[in-house]
Amino acid sequence: MKYNYFKTILIFVLGFGAIYWVYKFFAGPDSLNYILAHKEKLFILIFAHIPTLYFDALSWKMLMKKNYLGIYWCFIITWVSQTGGKVMPTGNVTGEFIRMYLSVKKGMKFSEASSTVIGDLALAAFSLLLMSIFSLMIVIFSNQEFSIIKGDNRYLGFSILFLILASMIFCIMIRKRALKYLIRKSYKIVSFKMKKKLISNLIKFDFELYLLSFRLKTVFFALIVRALGWVGGAFEIFIFLLIIGVNVEIMDVVIIESFTAIMRAMAFFVPAGLGVQEFAFVLVGNFVGLTSPIAFAVAIGRRIRELLVGIPALLAWYFLFKKNYNSTN
Image (cartoon, rainbow, N blue to C red; front, side):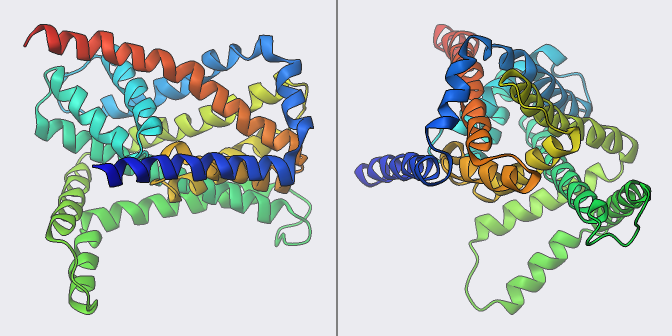
């Protein structure tokens, strides 16, 4: 118990230390001046985040076979679970368990809750991957030094065509249960032992995806809605940059959102992506032409939004779920 407590404190200390390192060596005081000069307008970020929450909740609801939860409760649970995933020491994965737990408390069967959450998690990962590939292809094909199609905008059509082909391959792999095949092959080839619980969870994940493959129309539209959620994150960055008086191209904020989200997803075990998110914003921001102070200001703006949205979410968790649970026991 004491070891886990110490480990949690150490992770947070290292995370905040990483943020300070990015601030000290890349951003400097100018980054905070952008925030302080427009602090009275930062509440707008709350409203800018609502579309993202709505699309995330809607894509999850679309996967439900029965109307267990209305869009209102899907929105509330998504809001609370995403916040919980950011503040818990175990990282973003915890948020998905919170989503299952709260769904069951609202009357959903555990099997339905787990299958829809797992399916939505897969759609979130795949839609992020597609958006990142799309952004990368836009960067490559629109750059005159690397472009194989110079002088026009046909690269956009090639990028979209690639996304369609990638989606088709993804669906085929799910239907053929490729993940289960890879797990079994890896288990035979790799010499070290994999935990049986991990293997069973991965196979269950593969099976839930397999079941979703028979609802391709639903999955297709849910995937589009999930992708709109990531676009909503880019819209949030765009609004923040407008607040601090920085003009930027739409595709630039899409690139920033997709690549920083990928980097943060890779560090899913880090609570709230402390340090990872800030470094990612500076790195990708520099790539699209933002100065380090502005890019770091965007990262801090994202943190401020997380607090503005997250604190009410924790209160909602208590009053809508914890309090009701305690009163019934």
